[in-house]
Image (tube, rainbow, N blue to C red; front, top):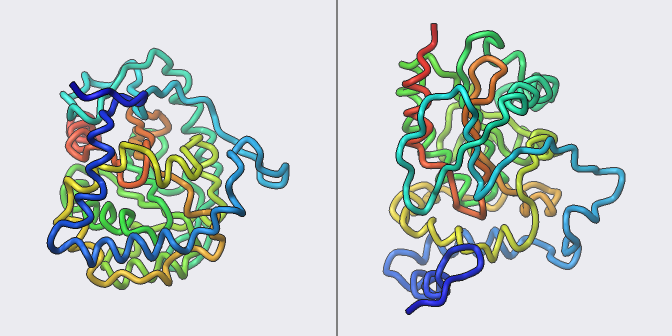
Length: 287
């Protein structure tokens, strides 16, 4: 019998990583991921987020999230999630509205123009629906893979009247590298070089989450998607602030200011099930 890991994954699932790296056709993907990982100066950022300097405080609001998922009362019944991505309920609708108000005042930068824009100006704050996908940094191969999936799903969001907002860690020029080489629509892409939105939403950060979390093994179930996404990959999209590569992302759905779905990525390559996000959007039609 496999001995379970303390995070709920068997040790055998973690040990499959080296074998997966040897799969035929994986060399190109592995090279991109290894190059990105090699750019991380681990000794400089080995302290936990709590030990950051006062000059860069974490301004996160407390999300009642377990295993990375949050569902708020008043939202539709949750669809059956994949076994490896459980969704747990929350009874804190006040938190949802507060997050929408707080996030509205955060400025990020348009990849298309380089100009700052507030979250509250991106969609109708009364009834508009928005999917806010916080990627990792623009030089992360898994970020490219998620961006490619969002790009291919954009037509479905558009037909439902849902605004797609993809945010990555880095400057607008780094975002444009991803947009040009993937490609990805510039009008949906934004840069958050100071990780203000990530801090506000209290997304995971650190070496353990980035390199050693068992949830990251899920990326290999999307091998072909990842391989396709990194065909034109370049390390040049990596932020100059190398500490930023330790930031994890998440997926959030808003109706007006109300947060109706949230999921924090547990580790690199661990993304929200897109079917769950689409079900939320379809069951909350825009008026």
